[in-house]
Length: 464
Image (cartoon, rainbow, N blue to C red; front, top):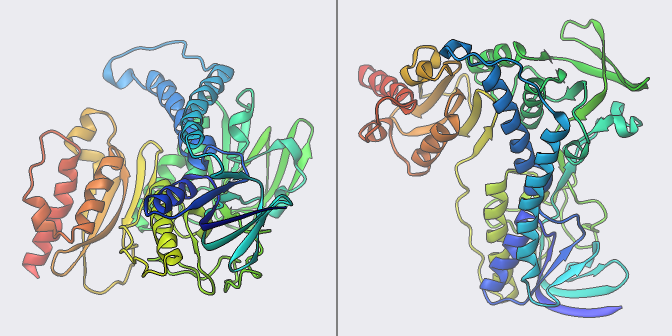
């Protein structure tokens, strides 16, 4: 067995792992990057990018079919499913190749292929060929789709985000289990591409929204396009001819059956921690198998080991994975040099869903009875620019404390990906509604709706 020693061993070559390796070496540490594969990062390979490519195709089809209100007549819109998916894969592969090209530029010997397993808190093995002694290590092993037990045994009738984009053609029908960000994005895109879609979710909200008014609007908006069932419990799933048969119970306790060509499991992703030997490393594990770790330094309890990205199950989105990787890599180098670790404040939480209309959840979560909160509201039905664009659906809610300091918000509507960034940055800067209002907003833009909500907050505070 090859023997290797380094300051920092990084396990995983995804977004967090690559960022950790670069941060560690930038800090002057000797580091290795252990990659099991497949490479290319979850985002580029099976997540953000291919899903947005599918959504872009669906947007084009929907726009062509929905031009009548503008006096534009489009007839004979046809979707070539094979061509859609071929473009998805071709563009996806370009993104993946760019990631792999960056890895190819790493120094010889910096990349080690195989599956890592800790022997103790200071060493690990890679398959049966290499033993690595380290001063600090970073776990950045990513995540894999959850597969609910009733879906086991469906074989190729079962799809996940890891397999969805490899199918040669669009199915005629699709059952989606899960109405969260991934599930509802894919479901709406598939519907607009001509696939008959049914969505089942055990919860009572869509796309991560929790504010009651917005959650009801979201259920109505998406339910008008596809067969959406909230409060549904899947009881059994079986292969049925050329498709699948799902037996489920609706929110009223009534037995229901759905048949579809394929079923997509979109019930979240679980950290890839099995087989790492975390017990041998001396880490203290939670009930979910994730090591206890400090959410600022990302250092795990029990050993000079850090955890970052989807592997920690905390904030599984790309911008957080990249930042966490950088923090973990720099702190691993600090531990290796017997220096103090940094404990930066977490970023303002930001989650986004690229449906039509878009959805975002920002900052402090919604709490119905939170004391001392003031909420500003906007409905997009009559917002000027939204009506001009024929995108006047949804609304936003922004909450602040009694001093007007912005805390968080939820929104569903047009241009939400931009509105959410405005709110996120304002919260991070500790700004009040009045301060943000004293900034220029061009007319006519959807951002004027943002200002309307802030005005309601300031007026409420002034009257109280």
